[in-house]
Length: 132
Figure (cartoon, rainbow, N blue to C red):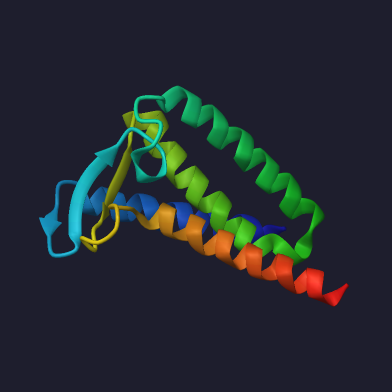
């Protein structure tokens, strides 16, 4: 469980440091913007609701990781991503996004780890299903 926690902390650290240094930068694929909604700007303006949901999901992710060792790496990615964006919501009232490939909505490191974690979790769940 210690590795799980340290991985999540490292992700939060990388996410927050990247946001700190890239705030206001508009160069190449770095295009700083803010997002008061969830992914793809859905639920814009519902920051308090999104903070509550993120907190509840983070608690469930932590409990799930505690009980299922095989899923800890993807869950650490997801937890780190959730906390990284939750910190933004709590302190700024929005999430700071900056990675812009021009063909996809602008996102950040926390979003990336959320997606990677979900994909890895799905792969592991399918593998576990195949083993039964």
